[in-house]
Image (cartoon, rainbow, N blue to C red; front, side):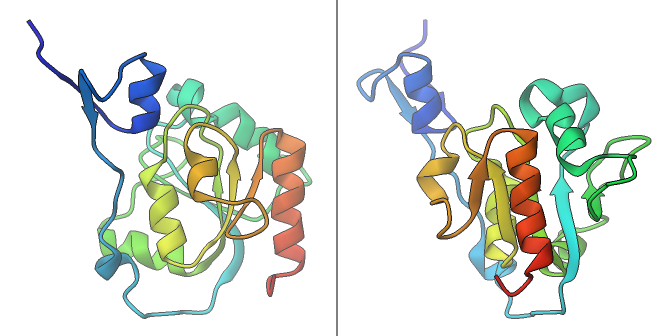
Length: 172
């Protein structure tokens, strides 16, 4: 018999039809002291994405959406950098310090998640000063205001247009 359920966000708690009367949630968070370490290397004009087991997690991480957005393996492919344990595609960073360095040296963080309240990697990238291009779903619009602290879209063409806008105007 369960007395109380715990969820990874208020968004998920409500999606499951629960209320604060019979459930609780844990706010997302990251260690800002670590991610905002004051180092600011020169940024490469690339779109960074960080996802483990991406091809097999298309349903939640938007593998097909990402491929279409960046023009993966096509003549018009955007400049990309991918980290994460995805055999045949990418390897995970060797350490959190390496991951932080990749965020801090990338102009754009591209998030194509389809079903995740707030991906932790999105918060890490924001803390490291990446320009954010993300899908506009789940809790993401609660932390990213389109045009203010990131660019939000849902179709591959819209996401690509956002990336191209920033790649063509890095000062933006």
